[in-house]
Image 1: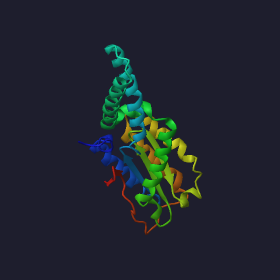
Image 2 (image 1 turned 135 degrees about the vertical axis):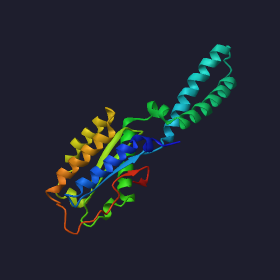
Image 3 (image 1 turned 90 degrees about the vertical axis):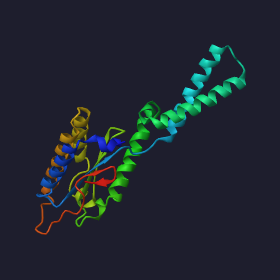
Length: 214
C-alpha cells in the first residue's frame, strides 16, 4: 500500500516538479529541494487520549444499557473499549485529528522540517544556499527553511507568502502546480543575490518523497 507521501503527487506532477526545480536552478546557485513527508509525527498521545475518552463514554453507555452500576463491570467495559479504540486510532491516523492540538501539530512539523533539512544535506551546499520546501501531508502543512547564506541576504519572513500560496494550492487540489509556483517564487527571491556560477553543479536531489530521492 502506498503512503500518503507517495500518493500526494501523481507521476506526471512529480516529473513536472523535478523539471521545474531544474529550470529554476539554471539561473541561481541556490539548491531548492521539495520534500514530501507522509507525516511529521505519529502522535501516540492522541491515541491514548482518544482511547481514554471514547473508552469512558462507551463504558458509561453500555453500563447504562445493561442496567449495571457495578464498578468492576464499568472498569472491564472501559478497559476493553480503551484497547479497542486505541488500536483503531493507531490503525486509522485520520481519526486522531480531533485529539491533536494545533500547537502540538505545529511544533512537530517545525521540528520535522528542521530535521529533514539536515538529514537531506541542505546545510552542506558550497555557498550555504539550500532551501527546503517541506510538505507534511497528514498535517496539511508547509514549511520553508533556508540556509545561512540565503538568510543573510533574504529576510526569512519572505517565505511566509510563498508558504501561504503553496498551502492554498494544495487545499484547492492543485499540489503539483502549487509546488512548482513555490519553487519559481523561491528562485525569484534568491537569484539576484545568488546568480548561477560557471562551475555550478546540481548538489542535491530535485525532489524527495518519503525519504526517496526522485
